[in-house]
Image (cartoon, rainbow, N blue to C red; front, side, top):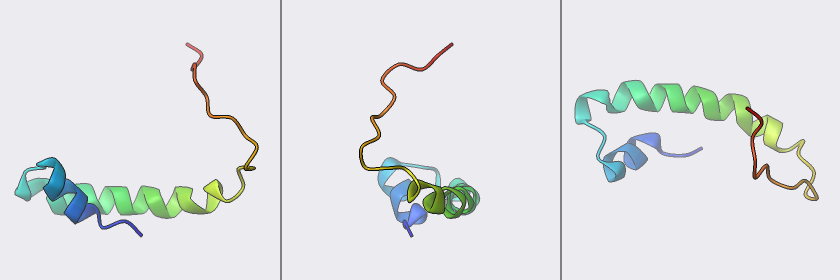
Length: 51
């Protein structure tokens, strides 16, 4: 898992926001990481998103 506190510090996130932001990002990472395994290696990234 990514150390979101360290990332936030490196990006200049205000210290009072670090815990809140890190908790949200940890939850999102936990939800999306298993889904990434289902994406085939041959899939092309979206370069244009529909409006």
